[in-house]
Length: 234
Image 1 (cartoon, helix red, strand yellow):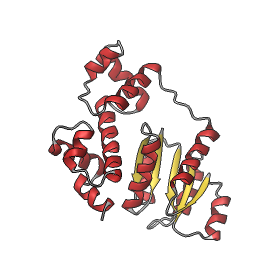
Image 2 (cartoon, helix red, strand yellow):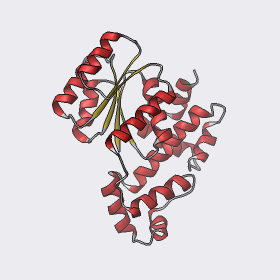
Image 3 (cartoon, helix red, strand yellow):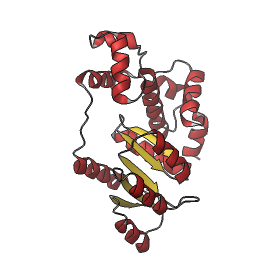
Image 4 (tube, rainbow, N blue to C red):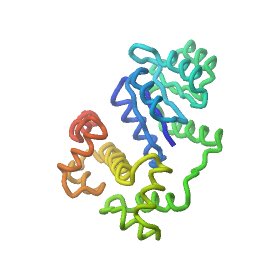
């Protein structure tokens, strides 16, 4: 499932992304710092849920929510604000958003909201047994060297067939999915274990080279692991 998080504060983006990935590591998380960036993502990807900060630069979160309602009413929206303002709550109700959360987001309330979303839509994983088996292998062995050919042999199909099915059902190539999964786990480890060195984090998520880990991380996140570590534990 694809989820969109829109917030102009990088730390808030990281925190919300961390909470989602911690509970649902298979969800695809996309982040934007303003409505314009979010609209570009909407042109490229179908989303089921959007978490939107009300106070955005330029077009506000409320205005972006109105845009979503007019152009894609299939997306459920949760508005997030640093101000417990009744007027905001009234506008949120008028816009028929699914929920309204106040910063700092409380973990239990956040997960209750995600559970409500799943219940409301009776969301189930529609992937095939084959692809689900591969996802399970990745979840259990992401610290190890995972090659498409080796995994294909474990699920008794050819590498070519597995590559095609995996991309069709997840929207990502096999190697891309593993990289994203590892980087997501790395961000979790960095948040939960501030005393770990970056080399230790890299090893824990399947990278024997810290240089390779840093390059993959920056390519996916736009910043280096050391820059994120600084932000998280400043």
